[in-house]
Image 1 (cartoon, one colour):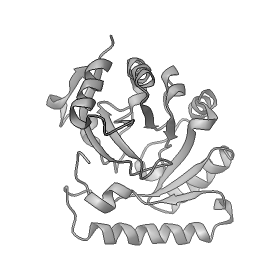
Image 2: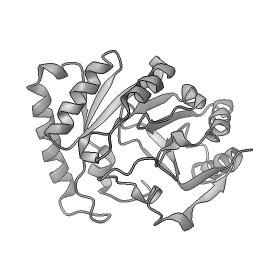
Image 3: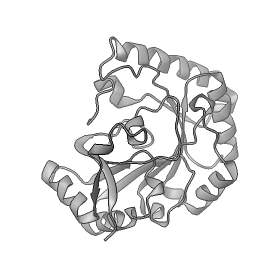
Image 4: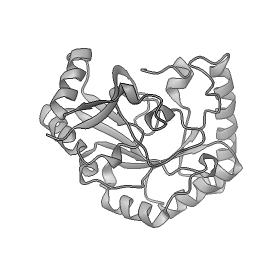
Amino acid sequence: MSKIPVLEIFGPTIQGEGRVIGRKTMFVRTAGCDYRCSWCDSSFTWDGSAKEDIRMMDATEIYEKLYDIAGESFNHVTISGGNPALIKGIQGLVDLFEEKGIQSALETQGSKFQPWMTQIDDLTISPKPPSSMMKPNLPILDDVIAKCKPETLNLKVVIFDDDDFEFAKMIHHRYPNVPFYLQVGNPYLDGEYVESHTEKLLSLYEALVNRVMDSSDMNNVYVLPQLHTLLWSNKKGV
């Protein structure tokens, strides 16, 4: 059975982002990413700082670890990263989740397609905006979105500034029939706990809400905070 590079397995907690925000879930965080976003809040998945924590695990080992942690207290697992879509071997894990009646979620930037992504119940594609210092390959993104199941798919763009908002408009109108979510960015990444973090983030969230309210290009969107940061700041493992 294929091995998967796993950095963290934790929960139960709540999903803090995208269409399933607030959903009780477990997390399996994989190592490795093909992007180097300037504001990445999980840079330890690709910068080498946590390489000693990587464990090569097969699907059965991952499921057993989830069960050891949570027992019967979960039926939903978020596969996170990094970019899990780089890992072909996740096929065995999503097959096992289906066998066990476990629902799954995934977020990826849309730079790579894997056939197992069609089995994900809650699939979020999050193209990275200009503030990330990354430039999405739109033809590849078109191809990935075309191969995914429409009923499981949603799009999300993180917003830090005016250029990001204009990028989000472009993505929204490029794929007008895909449910579209805007999420306020978190620029306060200095340490696990940031003083007055909730108040700072809520102020940014209110500004994004007001901007959307004034935009005729954004009539059919959802505007979200990053819920877990409101509760736990930048703490890992929640």
